[in-house]
Image (cartoon, rainbow, N blue to C red; front, side):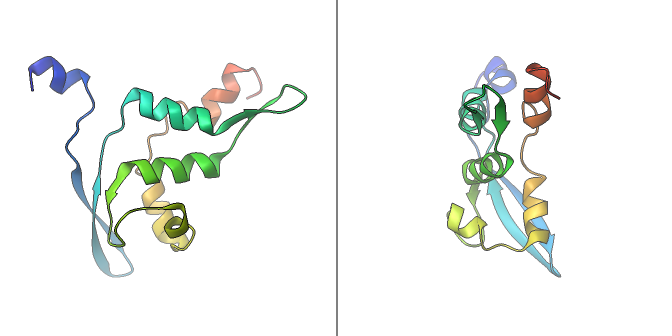
Length: 114
């Protein structure tokens, strides 16, 4: 890959990380999402009510992001069913992996409701 591609494009190579939880070290592979992928997930979590007020489904955003960024996990493929079963402590550690830019606070600030 050229220098500009390395600096401007999202990496297609998964990154290996370790997460310590309950006395063990667990191996995960995560991938960087592109700007378009992040926007698609963000858009899916935003809705507008009948009164025109926007709402942001944080739970949906977090689940979709984790399904997208976790390429490999101790349980294999990450699904909504798997995420519904993990312990809160592990969930918090996984949540820390999720890019936060463009999420709820900025969305509501944009609409003057934050």
